[in-house]
Length: 380
Ligand SMILES: [Zn+2]
Ligand SMILES: [Zn+2]
Image 1: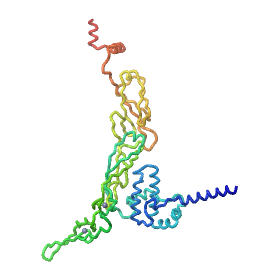
Image 2 (image 1 turned 135 degrees about the horizontal axis):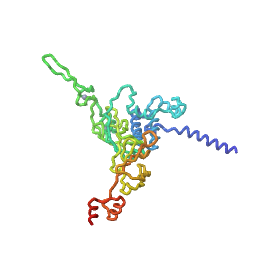
Image 3 (image 1 turned 120 degrees about the horizontal axis):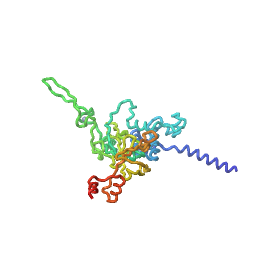
Image 4 (image 1 turned 45 degrees about the vertical axis):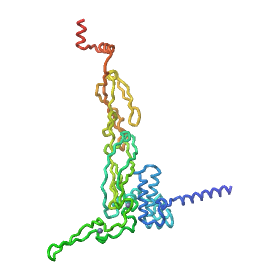
């Protein structure tokens, strides 16, 4: 009895220890050493946060990773929190934050924005690159049901090999001998005897940067950027309006001189001949019917965009071009519940020819004969 209780106590203690030890190692999460400098920490975070950002990867695993990486960066990039973390672990940081152990941590998307300079919270305005606009056509089915699609964008990225310096190593970056690091040089023109005009010119040797490079980076050949493609993940919401714009922050061309602009994706549905057409939350469909069906009624089944059966049924006469409205069979209404309407236009298809029996039967049914034929008949 006592031993069972003891055993239970041991198990309980083991569990408590587990909870304490469960906090992830933030250095491991970022893949850096405990002595890593600010630059290295930031670089690691940038790489990982992009890899696991929901714009790139919408798996559950990536979501967890994104949160983990954000939290690790939030702590390790803050000198005060890092000091506390090194001494007392994550619990210590939580207490410092005064969050009462309730998860703690800031909005991971804000952390992401600030690390990439979109936040504008840093006081000084950073230069931003141009936005890129892309047009993407998706199946109407994707807009009906909602979907997640991968696509890739060609873009320029800061060379990772040299970290955007263009040099083989840091030792290869030297002060520009032409402008002595000023980025500009002074040119004196003699305008007359004893009169000089001094002009400031952009230094062309270092392109105004004040630094020149002895040995170029072998990956980017000194261009500081490389051509790459990035895979993005487009969320198509149910009932998304035509021409809706989805913004991928900081996914446009990168440069060491500016903060990357956004990729803006404009989403439209593909037009398919013979398929559903869309106007806002309504759908349009053309349904062929035979002459017999036009006269005597019919019951057709049409596959909806998600595969469910839509029944088209009429009992009386249907005129060619007649439009029937089926309520609630249109597109899902964006961000609301319910659906728009389905407009069905009936197209009557004539038979290519009639047999003589069909002709006779029709003459009788309608009490009608072709005028020439009627004459032939009376002459006989
Ligand atoms: Zn120079
Ligand atoms: Zn390079």
